Length: 221
Ligand code: 5RP
Image (cartoon, rainbow, N blue to C red; front, top):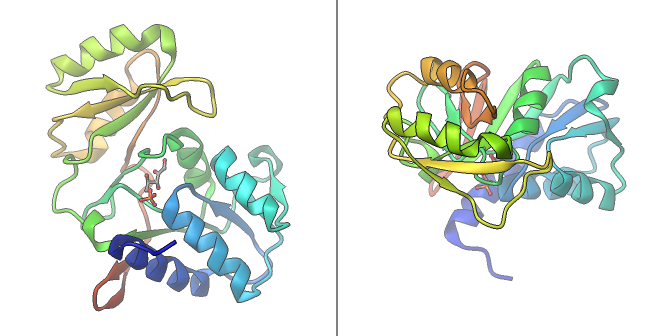
């Protein structure tokens, strides 16, 4: 199947990320189309890793298809490196994630990681987070309560229809939130009863950004 221009830029960033991976490590693996390119490129490179800690059933399936051992996150204290995409990333490397609904496990594996390499195409780099609707994973019984609180904060939550997370919960996609202070909003949203995880990754932001652009890959640190 022919790749779109955006896919081609994702693939460029993903291929560049292989050079960031030391041999023989346990590697944290994110979720999404950019990460799929990364898994494929890692395998094609022939670089050996000891195993992976995965952030979703989808990534686990892809890793296992290639014969890469997938460990449970409870088997390790840390991973040296986590590679994942983002829906938006700002110049200080705070991100919105969760477009694929895997935000909770992504946040857990990112928090375990000594280093977080974010791989994106150039459309994802924004001056200020918030144009992409912010995903929140919510315990189903709290959906109405959390929605009301989100409206008080100026957002417009919409239930992601026909979608259940790997943890059995609902996703609310919140439109229209002003995210001037990603750290503070991440904390405030974590505080709402029934919110499992919100898609702001500011407390644990990326350390390195590999950005696929029309002129090649930009590496920012
Ligand atoms: C999944 C994510 C992804 O990293 C994000 O949605 C980007 O996806 P893609 O690489 O397909 O553009 O957070 O929950």
